[in-house]
Length: 289
Image 1: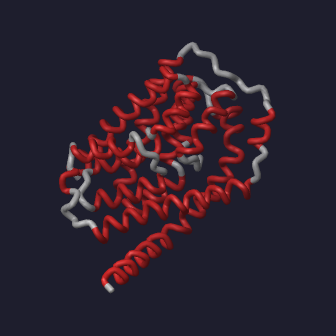
Image 2: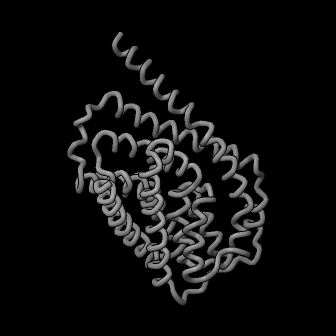
Image 3: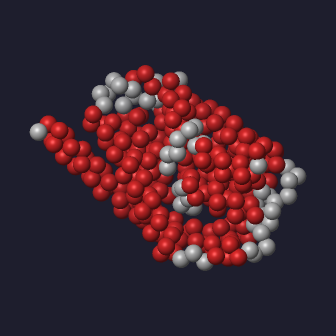
């Protein structure tokens, strides 16, 4: 009977949390799908520039594009073929999963505005730093400019309904997974279980989880929120939320294929160093307020 009551309580809390987030996620997914259909061409032709301007623009584009870590690299590769600089597309690969409407909605809903602001600042700092490092490594390398291949034309004609359905399904499934883990931690794990994940162990644990495993933002953010509630330091939670979607083995392989080995090495080293340093700074700022 205890198992059944625990299961009923688990499902009640899970459904309650999901019902609260579902309208936000649905709206963000629909807006994002519309942007995904039309933004890439407009970005290349009218917005993205070279050098620092392109890096800054692509860092800020993360707020608009609904790309997850599993879809941002192909889109970034398309931007690179269309003439965007290597530094600009590297910035987009970091900013799009971290700053998408879905990620920000979840962060605000689960962690509140103060931590969400620190999260945004950390993600922007990492995106800019990665872009500058990759731009320096790739300087002088010509972009493989696309001249209108059939594949790109097909990609640009994708239907809004198709993409919206895919986005809603993807976001809802990953959110349910993340909320399930978070609810399990909240209900069945003692509050003192993660007391050892204070700084710096929390950061080390987040790195150990993030580097090998693929964690989509809708799953990483609820997991980080639950770990933060159970004693993980803020630096560890921020590290998990940003590096989880951007440093897994599969994503790194795609980055290496799209930008080359040297640029990929600069991407990975700069991303980890910047996120850890910015997360530690945010941790200190939160303790002082």
